[in-house]
Image (cartoon, rainbow, N blue to C red; front, side):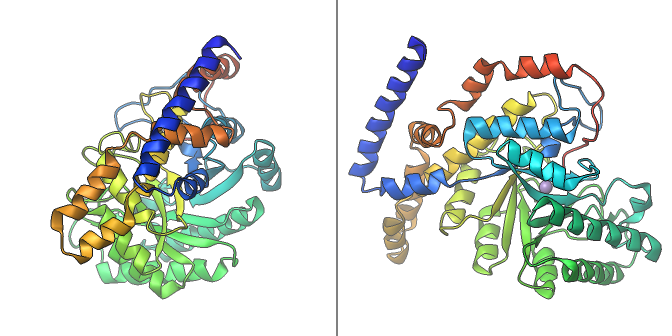
Length: 411
Ligand SMILES: [Mn+2]
């Protein structure tokens, strides 16, 4: 190791010791916090490494992966740096291959597993008026058959979740019968759920707008949880942070779903205006912290996934930064003094509870997350380590700027 490296390690140790002493003085159970932080895992999305763009343009990046195999390489690099991203979520058909057992083995060779399987019900021209809610029974059949095919693919891959986002909806009042569409949706999901092997769960994602702009068929958490309750216990709701109207209290949705045993997972990203798919924690870190305060109330976290579209920023670097942002939000949430919070709440101390949250949010946890990452074999400063590794230059050289296979807009 260079002098520079030694200095970095010494500096990290010093900063960590100072923070640890302060936290212990406050009565924090650092051992338990570090254990939980060390167990933190988030899936990265294969589609987050490939080409993505806006409605106006896609700017192709040098070194972007040309195949699912190279997307696995990128996911492995993010996991190497963060020690917290051991699974890559797949998208079918963008990641379709002939031999799924082979793909599963390739993931394992890179120290990864396959995360959630994401079917695609939004690209085929037949789905112009909807997929499983389409007024045409033949189109509905085709859509359900694709979902059933994805169940088989997931089985071959060792994937334990179907993660379903429906682009279905209508653009104009009167375009279709809203109750009929709901009945079609229920029938289709019941058929898919009945085909799920016991190790797979069905995650149902909601979104109030886009691509349909009058009535989305699963517009909100309520419509999603009602569908899940009809199906069974392995059907749960997936919360995508970009899929809400402005002003929606997302942390309260997390609390409601968790109390009902229906919180299935997350698609992390951030937004300023709509479903912007920006880097999680970049625009509203306090909201992310409050969401993690709810998540950390339970020892076990639900399935967490990043769902972002890096249109102008370097993709592997963006994903690496995102994982770090999540680790920091979780660390702060673990530092909330829960006993004091419960006391303040019981005593009706309105601002006392609020101050306890602010107090945890204001702690600079970077020495703590760095220490936990290094202990797990990752980098103290993952983005810096990525830049110094030359990974971007190497992939640009090796992969060139050849046409990518698959990819598409973020959801
Ligand atoms: Mn999503």
